[in-house]
Image (cartoon, rainbow, N blue to C red; front, side):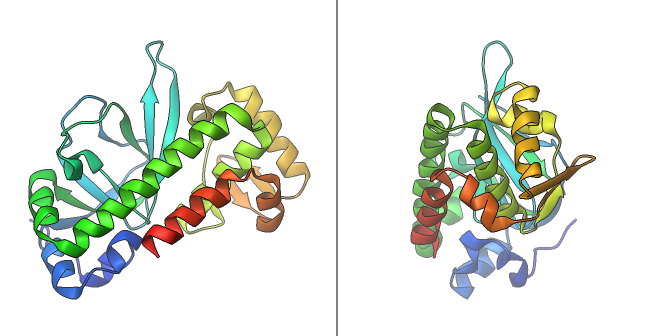
Length: 237
């Protein structure tokens, strides 16, 4: 049986780092440390959310699957948040799927125990409410981005966001996966990534993405990156 994580592990998650120590201890008592593997499905669309996950290194995508099987990403979750908000909101399930985008660590808690603790914990409840608004802002802005912005700008924004959440300038990424998250065909992503690489902003090789010139990549990205980043900063500090 695994032991509860140490408090320093909770501090690796931005959502939990500001909790008072007493509340952090109570949360740690119902959590266990896990390693999330790439493409692991944390919960499926329409199914009851059994566990919640606070990332300490992994990056998770919230995706929706259309009737024809095509997939598009709605939001990205890293160490700033959690996967499993339906457990907090009391809705039980989600119309979307949560799947690990980049492998790494996370803290897992059973949904029932987590909901009970969140309802009784003032600071945790407040942080979760703020996080919910930030995540909704991200999802809404992603919708704007898909509709209005060029593929190069969208790719730049997505790569920056993923780098932030992976806490690294380099991370595993295939063009197939990026195309799936963007809801486009792979050739569109290949052209966009090639343009960014020729500009010296990124380096892509053998399934690994590296941000070489962050400021250049940020200049190539649409305003959605700043809108989303600033909202998380405003709400979570």
